[in-house]
Length: 273
Figure 1 (cartoon, rainbow, N blue to C red):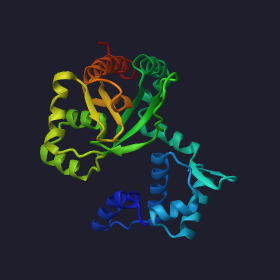
Figure 2: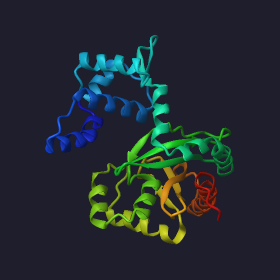
Figure 3: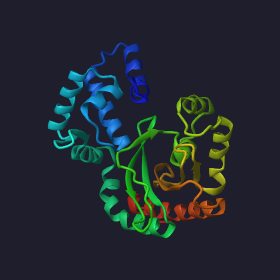
Figure 4: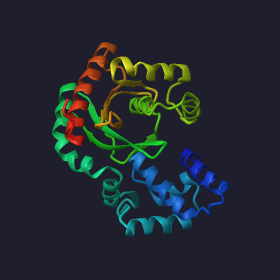
């Protein structure tokens, strides 16, 4: 059985082949393994990883052991399972602007306060390349049922409330937007006209919402964190279980996130509002 992980992530390799680049399969497998373990946040045995990603068992085992030696993965001898290692957290520092990453610790109290006040999980997302967004920070309300999200998680760049914001601020041409939209696997049925309308609403209210389309049981609201050139660099998002609050309360959360986003702009990019 071949999982959606191998199918979804193969597109880059196929385009590389089309342009005459020699694709080194073990390298591709390393990225697919790390991506799957980061996104599922579930320790797995070598046999399951091999099956889900359609990798030869012997090849898969050797790759897993090598990634463990390099610190990309960690191995639990008792359960014989693999999960992401500390080295990925270090690599994350190179993907996030140094000024932003160094200020994440200073931002955490603000995020924790917002999470407790709004009774949500607060996350910060960054655009990664042309077609991905990546979670770089998360804080939950310790006094409530939490939605755990691991830093380093990556999503298609149009997905979720943050994806709508990036599409709006990047001024993505409609044809390109439609092409990318059609490639996303939504958890609930969503047509392009509705998605485009939700993007257009950002200009009026300053925040975006994904009501169960990224994940059927999750609602996310997000606001843009802008640099001095008014370019969206990050998003700050509130995540909660779908149906927990009314539409009016979601709007309240959106307005609170707008305030938080401006504070983060000042913290990360030294912007005074």
